[in-house]
Length: 282
Length: 197
Image 1 (cartoon, each protein chain N blue to C red):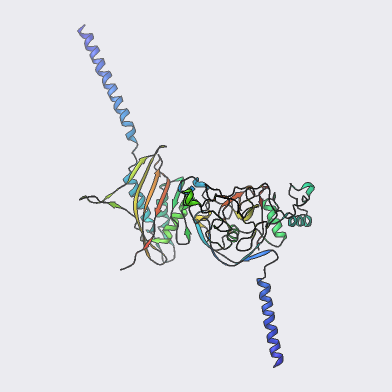
Image 2 (cartoon, helix red, strand yellow):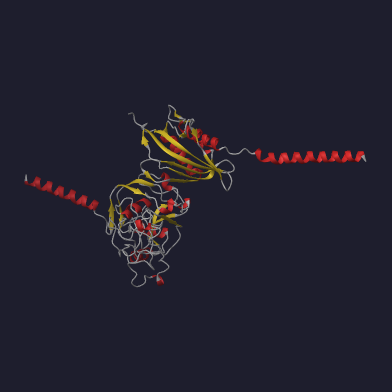
């Protein structure tokens, strides 16, 4: 009788450990649970109302209610220090701005940039991961705040819109509490600002990030509603988020098209840019 | 002397006839190309839209007649058409922008596959004792062609469950000089389900 009880307890402990092992996120990664979210811009900006945006630039509408399976995503953008290990292990080419191929002193925790899509993909593969899809990136960036403008929600946006007399602008009147590295002179060490609702840092600001998807301005009109993987082919790769060089939300225009969680951009796969870095998913 | 006067008068009459003939032919030249009739354009667009459910599935599961009605609708559009149409369903928010015929055809395909009993009608307007008139607003476009707009009531049933919906709306169409639609804006406001009282 006693041995049976012991055996049962042992079995339960094993099951619990196994479950814990399955759900525990890999180091410095966060699990985004399965479920639906609104992908794309679900609100109208005054620039739409005034017909100021060319029709071929409107690539973030309509918003779609998308289901994604659970996935893991890096808490931080890949840093220079992370990338240096990859360079050392694989003889990959270091970013051209590293002096003599080494990280400049004090820049270890800065996100790596000047890496093209192929190099970012190779890094993630080397780390046993992959680049996130565009849908995964956006769900992660939203931090659980559906249909908001920014990774940190709308709360930080000054609601001086009444004063501005532009009800749809959601315009900022101050940059004091901007919780992201925008409009700067260089990237900052990752995690310099507080995380979003999922515990992810710098989804907006610091560097723009490569995703795995091809870019197509027409994709949202007929995109799959479950685990979209992007267009089958294309000319450019999708780049998301905004970088240290991008303008902050401004007082007059409200959310611009390059710093909200739904704004989309693209780049040639071979381009190495000082404002594009990446993070990996799994 | 008398003879020369007759010759001069005859010559003048002949020249006058020639000039008049030339003037007439010059005036008639533009009429050779039929002008785009806004009312007919609107009616044609509505007819082709409403025909999109005019096909059936054969016993062996083939779509009979669907390609024809879709192609008939697509004949109206220029290759680089830009269209702004309403969201397809509750799983989308905001305008759907379609650029080029390949993307626009996906929308036409989707309507033909997901909606039945299509009955988009042009709204009539009445005033005093007069019977209702279908008003089509039109304007010549600065770059040639004509722009038209009219109010509609969209009525359709969903193919999947046959639930019927109606929505008021409006259509804006821009026709190029070749008679092809270059821009389309279709606005539909809130869709209300039609239920038996």
